[in-house]
Image (cartoon, rainbow, N blue to C red):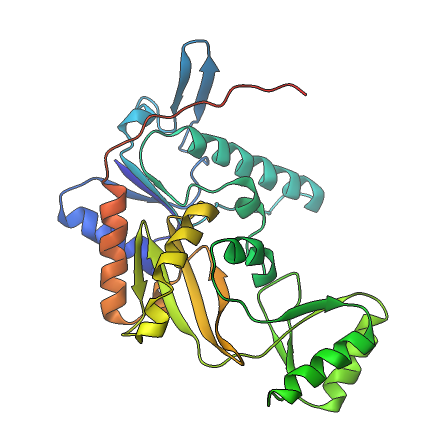
Length: 297
C-alpha cells in the first residue's frame, strides 16, 4: 500500500497515483493522515518500534509514502488558541509517525521544515553556500546609510534598484525609484530590512532522489550546477525539491528553494520525468529504521 499525503487535485499526487495504479499497485491519497477513519497506534518499548495507522493493517504493509501536505484541522468550533495548539499536536504526531516508518518516504520532513513552511531564501543560504551553489548579494540592515550604499553598489554595476525581501515569506518587491526607497527608510525606523540584488529570468530544476531534472534544455553553464544541487538536496534532507537559478550581475545564483515542488511550474516533458522519478523512489527497497538512543542532558 502506497500513501500519498496530500490532495487529489494536486498534479503531483494525481500523477503518481495514476502511474502506481497502472502498475496494479494499491495507492491512496490521504488529506489528513491521522484523522478518522485512521486510528494511530505507535508503540516504542524494549522490543522496538511498532505502529499502525489503519488497524488491523500494520505499518509494515505500507510500501512507500509521498509527503505533499501536513494535513489541516478544521477550525470550525475551536477557539483560535485551542485550534493552534491542536494543529501543532497533530503535526507533531504525524512527524513522529513518519520518522518511524521503514518504507521509502519522499520528503520525510524534519521539524524545521515541518513548521517553517514557506521559508524565505535567506533561511536556506547557509546550506546553499556549504554545497558550493552560487548566491546573489543580500544585506539585512536597519541602517539607512547601509541600504543607500547597497543601492549605489548595484547602480555602479548597471543595476537599477534592489529587491525588498520580507523574512516572513518568499515574496519580493522591487525598489526602483526614490519613493520606494523612502518607504524602506520608514520601515527601517522600526525593523531591519532584507535587501537583495535583482535577478533575470529563472531556470527551474527539480531534484528527485538523486536526479536533477531541468525545465527545458539548459546551457552547459547551468548544467554544471547539477552536482551541487544533488549535494544540497542531500544535506537538506529533501529527496524532492524545486530550485530556481537566475542570472545576477556577476553570474548565476540560486533565487528560490521550494521543498514542495509544483508540477505546474514545469513543461510536459519535465513533468513526466519528475513523476517517473517519484514512482521509482517510492518503489525502492525498504530500509531498516534505527531508533536514536535517548540522551539526557
